[in-house]
Length: 218
Image: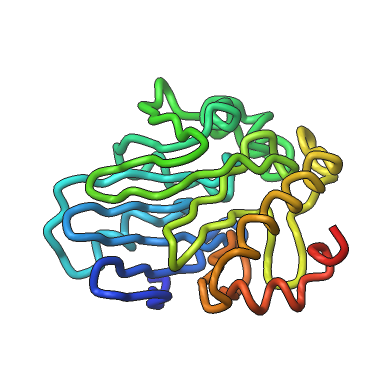
């Protein structure tokens, strides 16, 4: 069983992380009063969710930062609506787009997935309202999800690095534009706002602005 670690808790939200197969993806569980969001579900997510102490959960959703295979591998395990950008949606049904065929020699796809399109700006799932920002580069459909005190960045940016742009469908020029957009978003925030990336450890606004080379001079 993968270990769940608490990343954030303010009484309204509690956020937990587990590092999941197939390649160390950070999968997050976001609990509110009556809603569970499963962010970037890796393989084995069903067992992880079922092992967690039961709470009142009227609604449950998958929420995807992008649709590379490691971030969607668990979507077959639980039948839920999938919140995803329209630009990333193709990865749910295309093994080429989600790279399961290229990197893992698999052909992962979902049949007729039920999706909820994430739009730029305010979005609501269950009783949770948050802001979403399209920031392509690593993939055409990367989304950053801003909950105020914590932000999910997927593979856009990590503590001291950024997502790869040498994959099929990646675009380095768009990545640069997205990093500028991301910087303009977080530079207005308090330094202790938590950054929760798709891989590696958590960071915060203060640390990433000071220590991430790719945000300098842009």
